[in-house]
Image 1: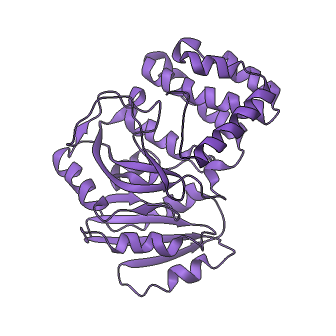
Image 2 (image 1 turned 45 degrees about the vertical axis):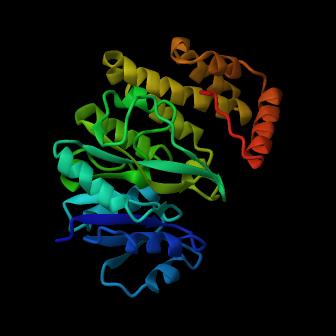
Image 3 (image 1 turned 180 degrees about the vertical axis):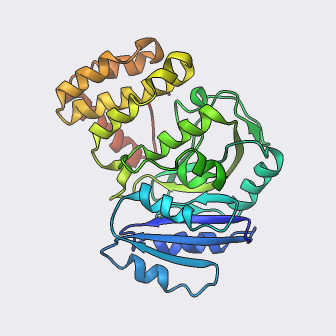
Amino acid sequence: MPFFSVIIPLYNKEKYIENTIKSVLNQSFDDFEIIIVDDGSTDKSYQIASSFKNEKIKMLKQKNQGVSVARNFGVAHAASKYIALLDADDIWYENHLLELKKQIAMFPNAGLYCNNYEVFYREGMSRKATFNFEYGTVPLLVPDYFKASIINPVAWTSAVGFSKTLFESLGGFNPYYKTTQDLDLWIRFALKYPVSFNPTITMKYKLYVGDSLSKNEYNDIRYHFSNSFLEEEKRNPSLKLYLDVNRYALALRSKLNGENLLYKKVKKEIDLENLNYKQVILLNTPKGILIFLKRFHRYLSRKNLYFTAFD
């Protein structure tokens, strides 16, 4: 039995899947299997992935049902005790699985094992993920997952590992969510189990890649997600803070999309004490100015300057 089962859901990523698979095969810790679940690709993704003649790779196919179903299907076929997820357009550095294994050895009772990562806003321009807690150079248990994740999530889908048994006990990814399915699962993990974090960067997330489910406009689903832990929020102020920051992002999306009723509804549900002054100002900024600021933000990013409402 391999130590890790690496689950890669695949849908129309013909430009990226070859390098993604190579990044797994190049791992310094090589006790793993790779399970690629093709989710009804209509390009050459399946053919490219199938061209790898390696006994570690298992190819599965399903009709297009979304990334949640694809990941659940992959985990169900996993032979290993531990699961590591990887999206088909992301890249692992060669130390990724080794650093996950270090966390498992240090914190056998944790629910989530999270490696640090960097975000590429375009090719050649990256920024380390930013978290809202203090850490050094060695793995640790995160003192408050929700507070720690209000800037960038401590748990990033292509940088996490977990026990197959715990994943199944929590019900896996919710197939209803075409977006936010990962945030939903990490909340369920963090409410029930400790979360560990390894400060070593082991993963490259390509934010600029198009056709990602996370970038599609599913604001109705985002709204459902933001209100799916109402009882838990009452007992957990940190979770309320975390979800209010997500509501803030949804409110801005809604305003930019002209979804004024949704914008007003979401805005009313935010405790403004959970936002900083920049976020409160942006929340009340007219749509035209927001569009200008968004374009200006893109211009600055092309000049290798990147700012957020947390800066």
